[in-house]
Image (cartoon, rainbow over all chains, first blue to last red; front, side, top):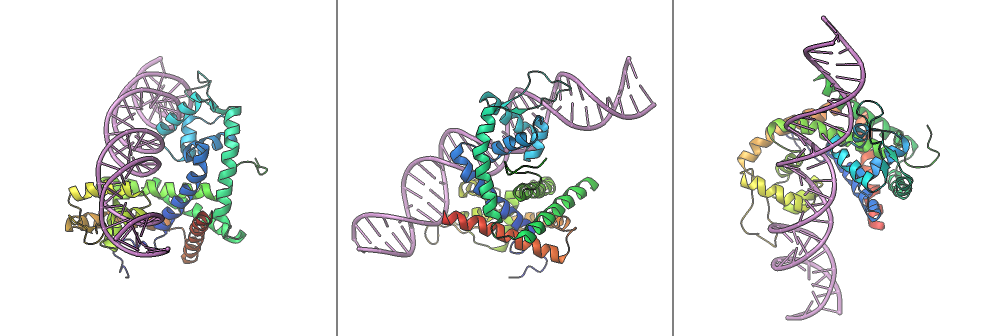
Length: 152
Length: 152
DNA sequence: TGACTCATGTCAGCATTCTGACATAGGTTC
DNA sequence: GAACCTATGTCAGAATGCTGACATGAGTCA
């Protein structure tokens, strides 16, 4: 059963566990967002705009962890359906600052409540200390992956 | 800057951080697997088969966190290209046990080494204690999300 | 000023993954 | 045995996200 250093032991791999946790979270979010007709990326975009109004397409893409092309497609749909607005011309450069419409804000409210309940559920088994631990270790993992990326 | 209980504060959300970490890991893995002509799911499938030979399509799907339809498409390609084999007829029921071919095993070797280096990089900033913490908190999050899912 | 680099918005095409649907095998219950 | 439920493999179509490519605006540097 042991791996003797060959391959990646899935039973003990933190990478595999991270993927599993992320997958479970995504599934849980999709489950509560589906009745609202919203995907996870869709929700992420609205939430980002609520907290940081005026974000550009590229900034939203980075915040939602998708490419700017993907976010562009989503924004066009959201704009068409009246959830967000963008000026016809860029005030400066090519950057188009995006904002939620009242409709977008209303739509986000329900979704945000649903997502908060999922997050609360996820953290139900962790006390304060453990939540701090989780926060710290996740941040370190992210930093390690990013730093070495630049270095290489 | 505070959120006053409204919305999900992305700066302090463990869910958002989890997604960020998972995204960083996936990007790092894609980066090292791309030169080998392999996607993350592709690699996951081979790695699962190396450690648990004879897994069925559905079992592989669960292990790689995709649907069985998605895994089926991948398996057909892997079979066509000679990385895995499946019996023409099911020995029992409809389950087709899948196995790596020598070619599949060779292909996995390089990929596995690359992925191991990524995982090592990710954990570089964590000592033994912190890795144990990470393992524990991630497992609890997964369990909380799954348990409540069944309960509901 | 001109050349260079970088980031952005956007279009097009492709890859990946998903949902929906169907037939079938095995186990359970009556 | 019959009815039922569950799991599986598979096909088809749709949604989602990605890579490649291009034009443009801003900043840097000589």
